[in-house]
Length: 228
Ligand code: DX5
Ligand code: ZN
Image (tube, rainbow, N blue to C red; front, side, top):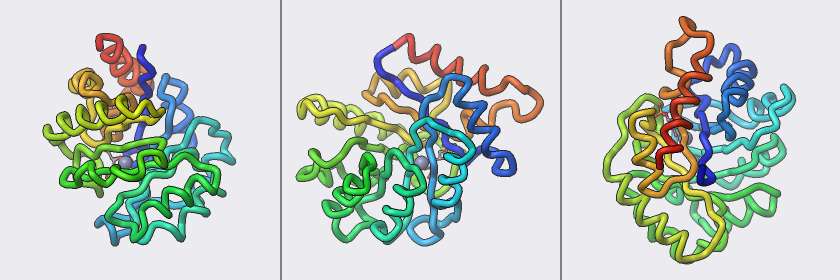
């Protein structure tokens, strides 16, 4: 299967037993932990920060942790996430005064860097920094909450971004975030994504009535991806 990776968003996990939730979802075949950081300023919601990232590492999580920063300003908190064990750190270009500097700062702190595109944000923000990104994250919902519906225009944007990456010859992951479910993941992959964030689509499934829910839902998503 063409280098596809699932990145469950812990935003929809049970925070009272986060370590166990992450262990279980990784054991089911997901590979990346998507870690949504919200500041009640750049987005109208408040979630988790570096302490929780560090706690997951101390708990024994060795998978890549993909820190999606929905915060403004950006730079002050980057070294904290690097120290806390982040693998990827991505941010929204609108939230940084100096995008090139923020990208460089992430790499200088030993992490992989990425830019995130809201539904209305043009890909032109990549024009002079493609050599400084390891991941491009296309939002298929407006950031701030789990459980929203996939915005169809994201498909066209993914295709444009896939073309850009392929033509550049660079090793850049193309991630999609928002409204990813079993029934649309294959089409999203065909549009060009290789990394799939899913929050409510994974952690919301079946809840406690089905103790094997991650195996089931992660298995179904991976199965869909084999058809691409
Ligand atoms: C939204 C977050 C997403 C969110 C996705 O701002 O960036 O990662 O958890 O949730 P679902 O998969 O439920 O749309
Ligand atoms: Zn996210």
